[in-house]
Image 1: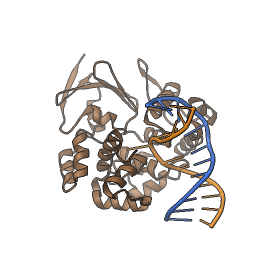
Image 2: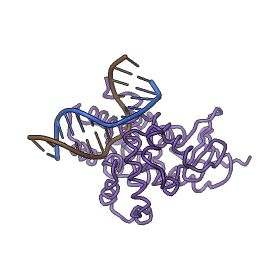
Image 3: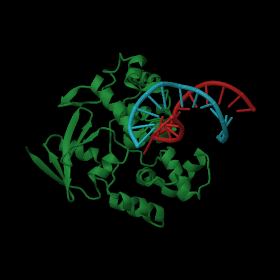
Image 4: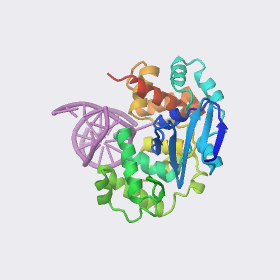
Length: 279
DNA sequence: ATCCAGGATCTCC
DNA sequence: GGAGATCATGGA
């Protein structure tokens, strides 16, 4: 099999895939990962600093998916300046990059994420793909397109285990199919406008919208505020005080500015693994 | 067994 | 705008 090597600085494959932003990867026995995005599937590994693609298809797509062109060294340096907490979080997982994932996948996945555990979210998505996606390899299924989900009822989503989120999924599919969510058009909107547009979908609140903004639209100034980030940020930056969501957002924006999204992911992964602010 | 999860919505003030 | 109850489900 053809191998392609790629040297990408500040990049850990495992940290990037396993830090909670992505649900569509599988760790293989030999320390490789199989990743699926859209209709594409890739198997890759990391030996030392070098990424190894097993199979030479769509390499440029995957380099974009892993945000290969961005200078994360500079981002980390800016964030670490005068910030011991952030320095600690970054040194815990210095190889995180923010993936560029497909819009509809992010929309559906983060609707499913609400009030749910990450392992269970992955399971739901896997079942959703197996049921309605296209087989693109041995046991591998693409995330279903809006068209593939056009006839799926709430009942069927419930049968997969989606629970109260079933209604949200049908609403999302319907609104996407009705138009108004074409990525090329959405790219032109300001972050605030795009957030409002996303929140017009039932089951998409600010946090889910912000995850879509960050992980799919590259709006790196957003700071998705979930239960973990709330704990970590309150504990480490607000001396444990209970601030309102609005106050927390304002504070994070002042602290991290245009790099808030990157900061959020370093903090999220660190705080969740260290169980900061819990117990 | 009981708790809790990358929340959103509804109601009520 | 903010506080509280409710929502399904299963992994830990």
